[in-house]
Amino acid sequence: MNADVPAFIERPEIADVYEDPGEAILKARSLPCVCPQQECGARAVTTDYSVARRLVIERVTCDRCPRTWTRVNCR
Image (cartoon, rainbow, N blue to C red):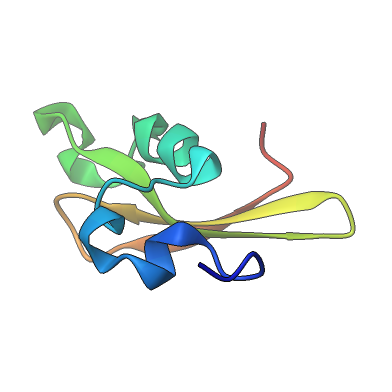
């Protein structure tokens, strides 16, 4: 095994087991959507994120409507 290559790349059978801790935290985060369907339990879920200059930039989408938006520096 090459020390520079992560094990989940050389061993694809464990690729599904590996989960980025940051993605696991963001997956668990959700908040009420601001759409009219909010009263029906619509939730906004983080679908993508990046970090730049110590700012967390999240791409958020509603799970019941096509609305998407960006949240910056949210913790």
